[in-house]
Length: 88
Image 1 (cartoon, helix red, strand yellow):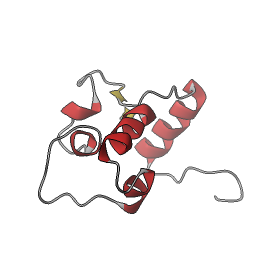
Image 2 (cartoon, helix red, strand yellow; image 1 turned 30 degrees about the vertical axis):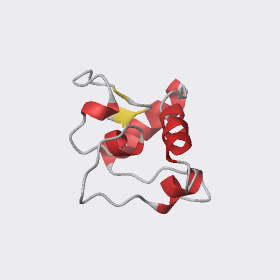
Image 3 (cartoon, one colour; image 1 turned 135 degrees about the vertical axis):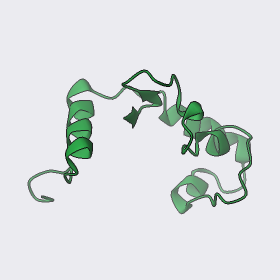
Image 4 (cartoon, one colour; image 1 turned 90 degrees about the horizontal axis):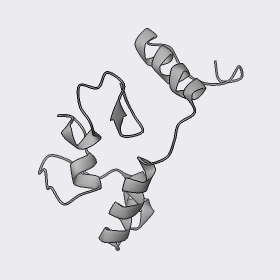
């Protein structure tokens, strides 16, 4: 499972090495023709590409609490929705 830029299974050491990750395009300089940036990514900084990449990389450095990480993994593995009681 990909979370916080790392794989729990330790098969890969970083998001950039995952085949289906957009990390290399959003955080680095790789270009992939069939990848279209999503609005949330562009909203970080529409015209300042270096700033946008820097802030995107910072997102992957954030520590995720173990409890939250476990909840995400459980929901993902079980194909469950993740949210509070009002959402579920």
